[in-house]
Image 1 (cartoon, rainbow, N blue to C red):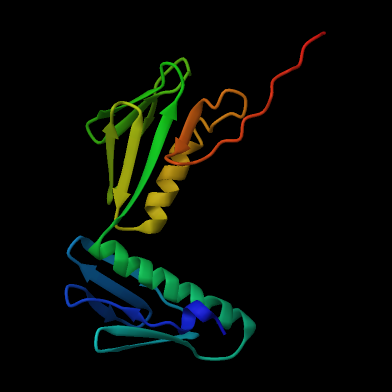
Image 2 (image 1 turned 135 degrees about the horizontal axis):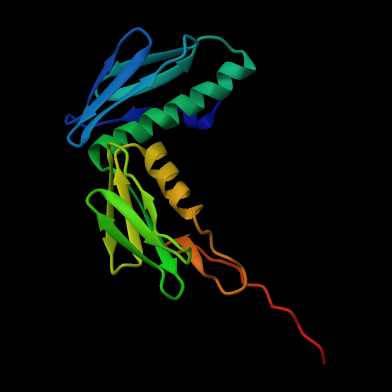
Length: 179
């Protein structure tokens, strides 16, 4: 049995949960999220607390029920507080700009790279070098941040590129040259 799956998901009065046949819908002050449920997972709600239990003891079901509990907990946190990822651009001439809701990156290519923000995601720019991605879905915020980082990941020799704020990039020594 999953240790995380056994834990209850507590939520405040601001959050409402509705369980349909195969879906759970979580509504809160920041928005609404939905998740499709497996038939092998049983969900009960008592006194602003949600419990996730497996229907059978099959190994695949036991793996899934901890994952479902974690996803539902992230949904509750997302609709109350939201999620945020910060990226920083390091390199001479590297900068980010907002063009409406789209993000334009100048990261050493011959053309600016334009990223369209999907619905539910807010993108902001600080000091032309910090990109802030925020939204209510942890999965979507992380995926968009990863997509932006993959445009120009930090290289190990000079450290230029797009990285998460606080990410450590281990630098390598260059060629030794002739002596």
